[in-house]
Length: 244
Image 1 (cartoon, rainbow, N blue to C red):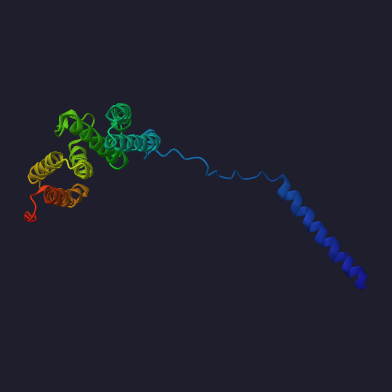
Image 2 (image 1 turned 135 degrees about the horizontal axis):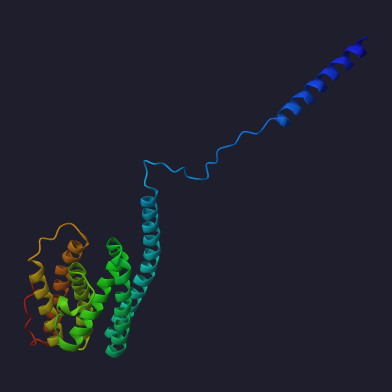
């Protein structure tokens, strides 16, 4: 009797299973909505969004190229400055011509995205100004005008001038080892003149302001160098007063 009831229950379960299987098998499947596609919404201009996407893609691509070119500009400018300190003006001039070509190509990249100039390219152009000013000083003994430095913004020119005064200080130290007092004096006079011009500006808290704050230390260093030279060259027993 027990075996009969057990077999009856098993047969009932099998019949229920196959009945459900046949019913679901023949029922049409419901379409599942795909979330991989974007529904067209009449409240949103899809073409306008595509333009925004294209703008950002162009920005990213141009920025990558600009970073690479900015590094090349800085590399060549540093090499040119090193060569100028070694007295190889002609080799430095070749590097600066190459740098100008790279800077011109960079201008085309930032034409569509002017905000990209800030940062890497701007810093690279400051290095370019520094090297070019140093070269012209060695050749003509003067500070190049902003109009003589192509492809730079006024702020980049001013930052480059401040960088140049540091190179001028290094040049003066080298000339002092040769007892060239006149050269050191010219460097001191130029740095002092630059400081006088910067006093016209109301510089706020910025990288340019921080560079300017270091200018007085550069001037002080040049004055100390001149004082030390005067001690070496002065008459025996007479010590000139220290600069204030």
